[in-house]
Image (cartoon, rainbow over all chains, first blue to last red):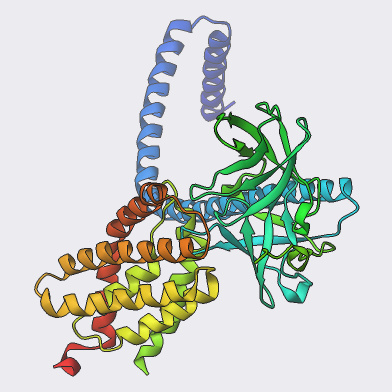
Length: 278
Length: 166
């Protein structure tokens, strides 16, 4: 065995001995100190490296994040627009479903749905404009309703639109009867958009909550369309008739879609009315 | 030719009046956008076509509204007359003239509407008309008169450039 081989053998034996001793736990404290120094050094180096990496890559990330943020904001606004559109459709569908239910429960009439597209420019008049006209067989005098009750009647028609006089218009007068009291009256509109009852006989007992329906008298409206309920009654002994205020069944401030009763033709009874004697 | 802008602008004003402004109620009254537009236009010093605009506005409103055409015609053309008269006399304070025209014009049109509709047989209690329609409408018209005047002044400068006017 030459000296070089002996030297190698000794080195292996020493290293093997040290490894065996360390594995056996004889170098515990020295090993812990060594490893803690090593870990500290690695931690320091790693943190510096990550800092340097952040510094180098940060500007590129901001640009990409801004781009991504803009994309997401666009997506959010698109989704919000979709949500609003879908909410509108749901609302419209609910209204249409209610109107379909109403038309099914009243099969004697035929209906044409129309959207409300405007109101009279003058605050003195209570009229709405709908998007159906003579092209859709809408004629003057046809009643207009919603699933809640009577809205008014068609006053003027052009090809693709019509103007509807609401029952709240001061010039509107509808012959009605009070269901519980079984008596006739006339419902008038007013400047403020309220509906009131007049021509109620003094001998009739009217109570708050009584249901008001069209009577069909005069031929202007079909019978049994809901108008509203009696709210308050004014009865004075020295007056010929009682008056009452009405809570309309229809919310006239939120008219979106209405139904025109197309199979009703108003009757003009003016020629049948007796002429005043000279 | 440049006055043809009256058609789209007044058309837009009438559509907005019918579909948007009429929904923005204060009690039972609301602003009158076509009235504001023609009053502001007639008050512009350079404008020579105020009467044409007034007539176009009358035709458009009569087409949409159930108000008798007599009320619309006399009312709106009366406002143009008032605006042109005041414009010559109060030319140094155009906003004051605008407020005056809107104040008097609104009262005039409402009084005319009340008178004619009452004559035609529709019951309008005077106190209700004043309290629920005229005063709220007057307030809204006065509030809107400043922005509408500013818009119409810019439009007048665009339609009638200064060098051409001089």
